[in-house]
Image (cartoon, rainbow, N blue to C red):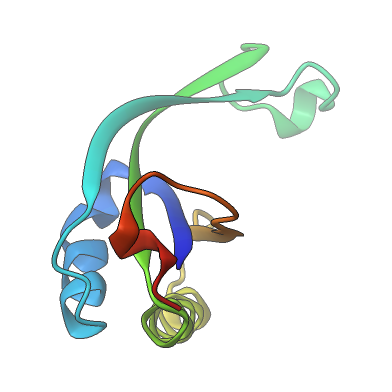
Length: 108
């Protein structure tokens, strides 16, 4: 079993939910989070808002999933990111579950 972690701007919430559904991941957790970007190293000309820290309304999804489901989500997200014209993308990572007290999580 894998732990799938997805972060993105809040505007992508519905797209991510659809991707999880298509990958047959029906149980997941979702949370609204604040994303921060430290732009203090940017040149003033490149920083339109003239603030050192940019705050973004973001979302965080996490789910326990099988390898096949994780691979499908990666494919869906990579396809979405390739087509999206926005500078913001959906980010995804996966972590192996080494040990758990939940028998369901030991299924590969």
